[in-house]
Image 1: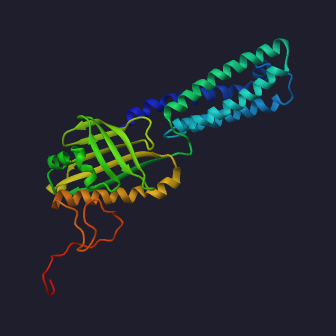
Image 2: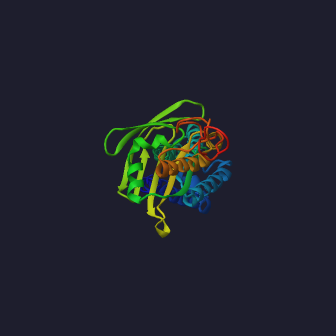
Length: 302
């Protein structure tokens, strides 16, 4: 999947967390020295603001170092930098001589830190109020593993059992364009790349940068116990720009389970079984009520 890419983008966030530990510790341990260096040692309010800034730095560092996905929380540092720049800018404007020069140098230093924080936050591309979902689902299919892998590897087959996936256009062996029907009925498209492909074992993909819903996925194939077919294990990860409200609208867990049930039916029977008189076609909405397929009779009881 994209765990390696995520580690690369989160590594700078954790480095900023350690930097925050150093800054916060200095502001709490030697506040007088910090006030003198920044040119505000003559300010009564600075006796309170410097320790408070140190506490803020340590709290932000704790979140960045303790979070499984620290990248989005860099935005809290960006907000803190903005507050520091406003205070230091005002301090420099009100002072003269050596104190003014010290405040100006401190302002420039904080501006440099703010630039690094902002670049890291933008690189990660998420905000704390966005929601990242990781979904897991599994099913056993009574077909040989290589056959199940080949069907899934042909990406054009995915819309046959994935409810909201309208189409997958294969560009080349690793790249494709996906079109998905969103909860509001609007079609969303993005490009995807296969990042890992081991025949008969695993297929992993991720969306390109700049999509409305950043997503990635991994499906693993293994022989089921007792030669009972193939175990298919799916892991999906995507970021919802509308947070918990978006998750409630999409019902992602239920959709993934239903998609896998349709996949199993297609692999084992060649079609999605539906009740007589029910909606036809594998693209029908999965929430419509179904019942087990029954033999069609011409009269009397079956």
